[in-house]
Amino acid sequence: MAEPMRIRATMAGDVADVKVLMNHPMETGQRKDAKTGQLVPAHFIQEVTATLNGATVLAADLGSGISRNPYLGFKVKGAKAGDKVSVNWTDNKGDKNSAEATIG
Amino acid sequence: MNALRRNVLKGAAGAGTVAVAVAAGLLKPTQAMAAWNKAAFDAKNVGDAMKGLGVSAPADSKDITIKAPDIAENGAVVPVEVTSGIAGTTAIAIIAEKNATPLVGSYNLSGGTQGFISTRIKMGQTSLVRAVVTAGGKSYTAAKEVKVTIGGCGG
Image (cartoon, rainbow over all chains, first blue to last red; front, top):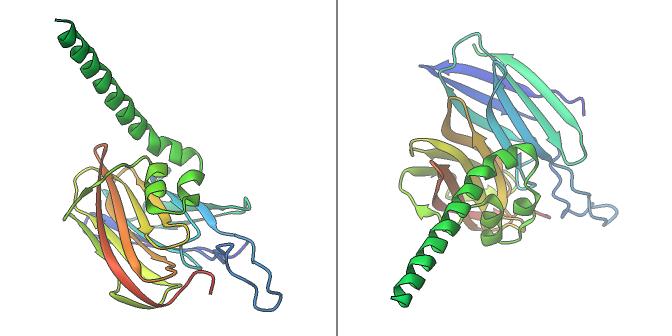
């Protein structure tokens, strides 16, 4: 999973508006392959952690009910332009990905 | 005399149970951070999902706003925004009540993160989308119905 993850963080007053777009199939394990008729094994992001300058601001557990290529938006008060936002995720197969962005 | 003594003991035992329950509730967020909450996410109904989250009988709250479409044409992608106006919100969970596994996501907020989560979820069929908010060790909830014309689970 070397697919890139996109983070956009902008300031609105004293609140940072962070938007994250992850690339992931998010298979529920209940969908059948159209060709083979076999169930497609579950493959979805389980944990997402977001940090602001190294301190955790969001620790999320996700289920298979999140849409493909998950979008996640959250707001952090007290951040300022130039701060670093970093997001890490781990899926049920142990794949990981992370990305970092600077609040603009 | 004896009957009174009994009652006093009973009262003390009752209070003890509540304290343990509260402690368990407070411990939950740290546990969720350490490991994915399998019990809650594998739950097949709303009650079990809430139990897995350590939430019981959350109070209805008007301070929770759920922004979602009234009618979702494509159940595979339903935008949902939860805003909690409750001070000291530390966790938000999103539940699609009639999904095969209702719990969609649970978010622990720390630092300066506000009571706001925006995401996109899958919905198998028309149902209530429920938000469960934890603030100051108490649970609050609100729900909004989303009509789904094409299901997004299994299709």
